[in-house]
Length: 639
Image (cartoon, rainbow, N blue to C red; front, side, top):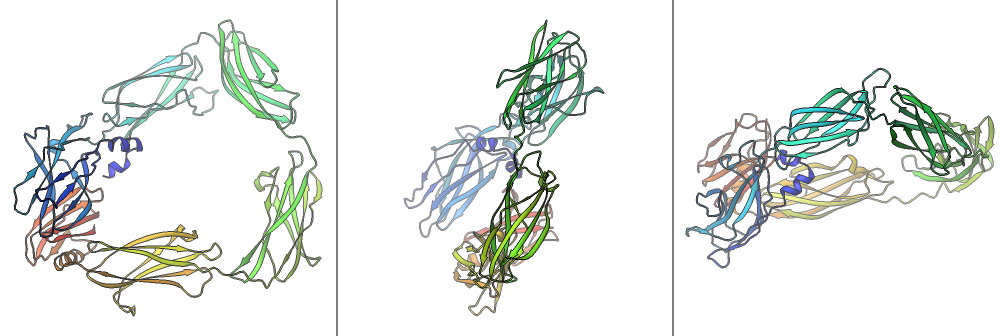
């Protein structure tokens, strides 16, 4: 199952596409079974079905499967015994290895399944309808690349190989990058066209043309081809073939020099033929040209003037010679805004209450508009109380802050409010060797007007009781100024809270920063009456917030005894053995975390049964013990 969880979303949808839908009725009109929909899985499939059992009946349900619809050689999958109503029973079946396809098969194995059942000692009832086909796939295999070949082209190459993706549903995604290998090129990886591709199959004849490189140049091409379980990669060095001598433009960049000009740089080669390279302002049609005749890569710079400030301009470049017109490339440049007189505006502050120190505080704010010629070097702040100087805060903004942004707003430092009255502040700004003052912003604060504290709430919304397992669902609300700092759950066997049987911290981590949410936790308990109590602590409250709920668990004696046996198993298990004392013959099944059966044993009815688990690797497992009276489960850990 772990492998299944790692498969891609696409494959998960594909594997779930097949379904088993049908219904069957027993000879007892009051007993019906409806199978659900098993999805096609790797080496396994699952079913979901419901069952209604008439009082006094014992019903056994299982599945038969075969390689053909005639069921000439049927095999059986593990069954269940029912003595009471059950709904939406989910089973996962691992197919026998004898019926799986060979390891290198790419098609998967089609098997046919049908339900079967019997009531008490009645003869087995098999149904010819519905018979459904389930496709079971082998595990994905490692990706393989064979007969690899690279053919140089003018400005690119052709990649060819026989690819092995692992199966007909496992995709491989070849990825490509290239760099120029010789000295006058920087060691930078670039993306060709295409940069990523895909294929699927056992021996897929793959061929792909890559372009976007210089002709007659030494190039490293890195090919990486991964699937979900492995990866193949290599770096190949080759020399692209000479072109038809059409000029090539590869890289382009640019910047705005002033409010009305821009510079465009391109990398180009003309293969020794006199070639004219064009750079066109596509907004107004202005065109600049340069002519070169070189076998090397040349950097050409074009300067455009008479532009509008603060405007985006797309510039298109290409080359022409006697062999024809080469490729083109476009770069967009935004000109700088015009020089304007900077403006600075003090904004209304943010006023907050400090619940720890029990006083108000504020964050002054300033907004501004400048340009590249008048960048801010420093901002000082002055705070006044009742028209008298209260506090001077120098250098709340320095040239290094946010790269001296051309636009605000900006939030100043915290200012504590120590008394009721009128507070004002202004900013003094140094920009382009000049001093500017903002407006004066004032705000009246009533120091004695303490805000109301909002107390968080806890609520137990429901308690669901299963076979020896209880699920408690709960929810909480809090306030951003009075968040919860923790919630504890405790379960008692008495109303006076003296016999505690369970405790756990159920709200931690990032959830504490939320103002509302829901949660749940599970408890394994025996028969009895219990009280569950939730206790929360908040940032401001001295008293905990509590809620309590009472519930009862009633099992039949047999199921309770069975669950008690399971609950008595030590966890973790360190010596590879467990002891079970059973009054009835039982079946022991252990599943791994993927749902795969790893141990299945018949246990005799006696006081001391030693079960050897030494074959299991360390980790978490699920143990299920079943007899004719019911089923008991528990999560175990092997050290």
